[in-house]
Image 1 (cartoon, helix red, strand yellow):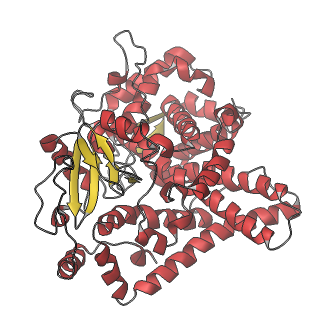
Image 2 (image 1 turned 45 degrees about the vertical axis):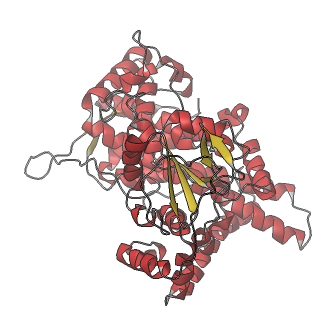
Image 3 (image 1 turned 180 degrees about the vertical axis):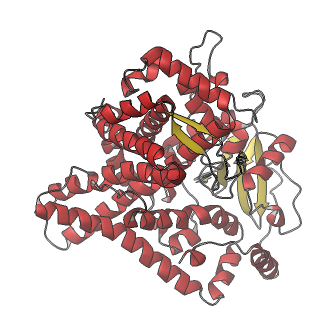
Length: 515
């Protein structure tokens, strides 16, 4: 099914653009008394910047434009306006300080066509979004985070043990860890070791949306393009198959919870707790409520698993390539914690270098190089520039992490940039990868806990190095950017081994009672 679920035929897309351009009747004339749009590349007559819109790794082109035109860049295509925010200050000024205006999402017909209208991160700003997000805010309140930590600690410990036992399968171990955390929160489900059917189904659904979101945004720049795409053979079948898969992914773990409840073996989870609350409702209310629970639970998975998976794999890749940083973090853990126990959540404030390394992983390889597009609900004036109603506003996280005004030598992996001269953490803890304004990720604190404990346990017990092949030569690891909304490293090989027999023994002897 994966061949049906992506738009990678770029020549066809450009052909459609030219074909649709011949049918277009849109104009781009500007009233004389209106302020200017932000600067940007010179548009063509009528078509505007359509043919300049990048389909592959658009954040790189947007960053180049930012260096040429400034922190705020404007492009348009047939009257469809896109504003790119290339600095942290611009994103804060527009998306945070004026979130009332910029909390909406563009209506991405392709994503909805594929069954993604239930996804809260892409949902239009309104009552349905507020209600759905409100439920998740209750679930992930900071005061309740400690209740998840025993489970996170256990699963992180399990992942590190699997690193030691089957190091070549570290991609699978990481996926089972991040998926295991979100599946436990959503359904009380524990993935099996190795390839897990439910995780694989959910992962395919997640990629259905993340692989197509950027292209859907570009296609939105010219509405006739989507209408022409609808005429192509197989288009409707593609949508039918995609929506069928989404329904199955949402339904399968829900039925698992129902079965566990009937047997009296259900673990506490979002789904089981919600089902307990509505146990006495009658049809048709019950059917509608079940649908809503399925969709919210599905959001817990899709909103967190892929990004956490990308972050942990980026951590492993960074440790392979930057041995000095790994050794400094290990030395801090040994000095602060010693060799008789493992890191716990309560140690986080005492490990500033480990925290700085965690922040640098997210900066050096941001898990979402482009933020999910926002949409303006009214005209807005920013620094004398005109941002029109319905403009799509894209935070270019990649450019923000490469801003030399904020990060010196941005292409160097340097955890020390987050430390003061006396070794304490500085105030730079802006969670760029978690979004902006009212759209900031509601589960970000849970994600931070999940990532930090996994990183700390891995550093405390394992050495991550280049792998040696059968001929005794080191296998190179290429630091290559993928071309997806979620920047998961491309497959690579490495060696993950216990730092010592004592560390391995410590892993075996630890009491998993949480911390």
